[in-house]
Image 1 (tube, rainbow, N blue to C red):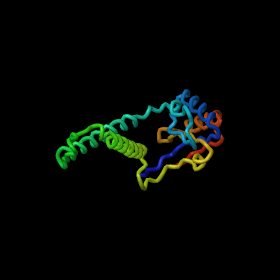
Image 2 (image 1 turned 60 degrees about the vertical axis):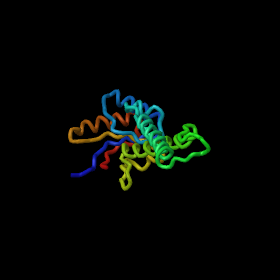
Image 3 (image 1 turned 120 degrees about the vertical axis):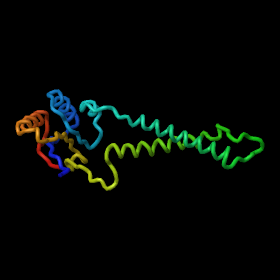
Image 4 (image 1 turned 45 degrees about the vertical axis):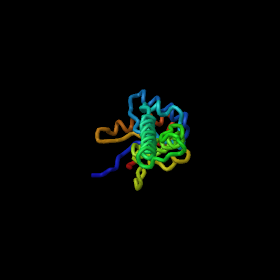
Length: 176
């Protein structure tokens, strides 16, 4: 079984033209598989109809875990493992542990969100990237439409004409 997929690719040279094309193509009822840009295009995620990310919720959970781990570790060390009497000061002084707790919260949140992001985007070590067109990393923009067994030649011709009408400078098929 092959992991390759076939795509119809439309290349654009302007981000405003791309954004307008995405809106018009989606209004026409065609599903855009993905958009590739050399820099972030404001409003593209809304035009593509993408769901907002929930990575901030994961960041909160990872941060709360770091907070809990830090306070638990400090409590265990100061109350049970190595209680030390410093001139009558309490064994567990919360204000003294704010910096360590803050650093653990930030550390767990940052590492957790980074690992989550890489996992969700399937960017693990040794992964071969799916590059639709080398020029999208430099100065051009691309819209892709997945072609499967249900899409016939009429679909390809219709979408190709629509892409050209919307300002695509190049339209071709590519297997990745």
